[in-house]
Length: 488
Image (cartoon, rainbow, N blue to C red; front, side, top):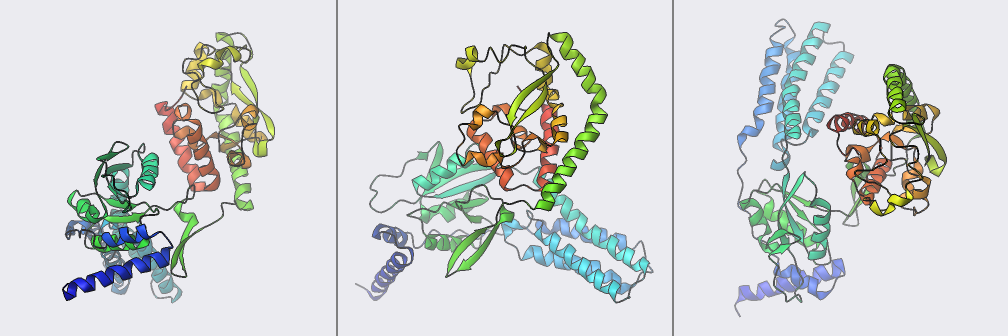
């Protein structure tokens, strides 16, 4: 045996021992890691210099804004020039895949410019005209990059993604991402233990298997995928992640590790290092009392103003319901509210008055999973009722529930008491806040959603609530109503 071959054997044995000691897994895993010790190196990807065009256009716009005031102090004009230079540096030093995607550099440059201008004002240096010129030029320099990123965000295509991991871990990711429009799984690189003598399958859950860990980097670059996602499991280790990151470091492909943290948005997660282990600290989802009080006041104010503005429309709809079929125009039904406390919810009646009595005979026609009940062509629905449901106008009387404090404008789907009887501790979490007239469940398809998806959306809302999120849901609700998305 030659000297360099002996060296390779010693290195391989040391690598296996290190993995077994650090990860406390079976010898099979160490062997797998050693075999994949040198994943195929991706060829270097040359990033086009055109990614700086938005920033340079912003610089030209800032220069044009500065020339509007030629008599301004030249020192003050240095502020927007400094902002443009700082922005270019912050973008260039970022990974290639993140240069045109994130708003981080823009926020940082804006913060630095604001602090610089504040210090200049505190020192009594500039006059108002100089300040106006500096602010105008700074805003102009950041405007074009911001608009460019917003446009890319609005027109973004599904991310081409390569999955890397064992069969179980990859299957879990496919189940979560397969139906989602923002992700397109381009291929799978399977990492299997040594004792698995079966040949690699050609596909997994309908997605092609394109190789293993040793070919993942080269395949990702050659096929121009945007991201490689590694799914942690008993076979794939931290050493594999590190080696693949080395193989991709000269490319523009993003490398990510799928973490098993469900229902928490990025703002609640903080990475930190403890004893050479990377931990993800998850912040609590508890709402501040001040924020909860402000939400209640905002709900009641908006509900009161909306009721006044829509009173003529509501009266007209009441007349239409009464003329279309016999019975009261307002339908009252007991629902489970905050912490499961029952309340009477109001809606415009969309069914015949004997709808509750006929429910038993229609049970076999139920199309909804779980405790929900839904029939696409419900024979109990009236002619006007179909129109009201299609336009979501039947829910307008719930503004009275918001005024009374039983409901919120935005929140989880209001459940029936018979549904909550079957709730476990997990699902009961959705009762920890007031139900809403609209919510994630409505803007995501409403009646087209399955029971599990409805619960997941409600729990995500409860755990990650923000005012900005409520505003986004309100805007998406208007869009969903206009498109009649999921109405039934």
